[in-house]
Amino acid sequence: MKFRKFRSWLVPLAAGIAILAGVYFLFTLGRPAPVPVKHELYEGVTYRRIIRYLPHAMIAHVIVIDRRLQDAQFIVTPPGDVEGGTVKARTTSEFLEEFGLQVAINGDGFFPWWSRSPVDYYPHSGDPVTPNGFAAYRGTVYADGLQNEKPEPTLYVSRRNELTFLRQPGNIFHAISGDRMLVLGGEIVPGLDDEAIQPRTAIGVNRNGRYVYLVVVDGRQPFYSAGATFRELAELMRDLDAHFAMTLDGGGSSTLAVEGEDGNAVVLNSPVDNYIPGRERAVANHFGVIIR
Image (cartoon, rainbow, N blue to C red; front, side):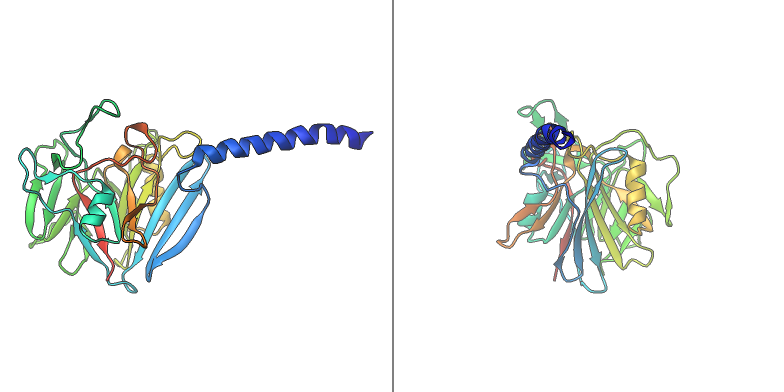
């Protein structure tokens, strides 16, 4: 008798689980599977997908570059010959393909920008924009960030591909700015917001500069990935062993792309421009990696 009662609710339970699993599969279709992943993209370049469920769903995509094993070259988007801005807007995928890169993430915030609806937004690819903060390409400074009331932190890249934060060198080569510092000297920056949950992009280095960390957190996608607060992002960067780390533009701009086997860009995360999962936003500048 007890076995029959057990069977009577076991079948509906199994059916319910199967239905929920099917719905979840359809919901996540076309997006990276919400399962942990770790594999080597190139010698010395590793991709990790980190999954967390508490205190909310979060999917983080991490590129770790070991500069001892990989003689990587870093590049920032160059200025453009456009009126009304200093650079033409591109998606991260377009940036990667145009400059023959192997890895790319979105860069600084920019202006002008609006996103009123899926058909009423700016910029489109090719439209003139200007980064919010300081930016330079091969010694040419094309954004000074002086219009900002709060100066943005800046990452400088030397000719020898050494990365330093905040300390402007005598000879500027590449430079890209971000929203705020997350980790300074191995310590999380005090007072970081721990309430607003959004898609995020960050870049960091370990203590001796051997490892470079590129991180994109998916967000604004219910039941898939809500995003991260600045505090959570800083904790993630510190867990990765970042000694210095800075956020770049987040929200609908957050994108991580790599070169596929056919040479075309493959987006590893789930961008969410205008709240549409999988839709990339055209942005002002980017941070790219050339694998020799």
